[in-house]
Image (cartoon, rainbow, N blue to C red; front, side, top):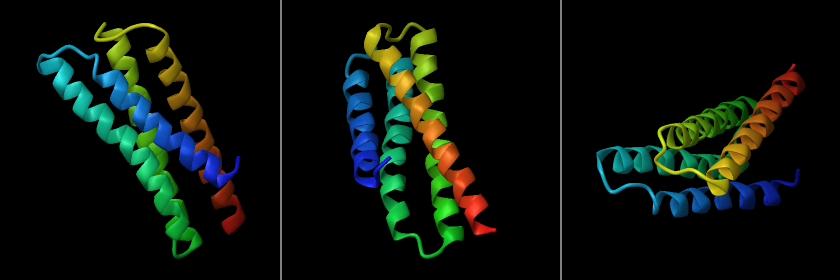
Length: 118
């Protein structure tokens, strides 16, 4: 996948998560969950963007592993939102699929980078 397309995709993921969180309950669970998912989803895009500035292959691998961790964390929080009934429906399901796909993309990128390093 082209880097620019993936940068846009990760940015859109963050934007879509923000919009989803606008509909979370206005209580302690809703506020805390929104804070967590918005932070992790934003970190996916911001840290992926930072991989462009990697100073070495080792630095790239470190940065992509951060992206991978944040994508997986976003996947977790989206499942919590769904399973706790904070939000349900097609948009939650779509974002879970997107988080899962992003996690898979970055896991593959990490594996490839490590293989090419040797």
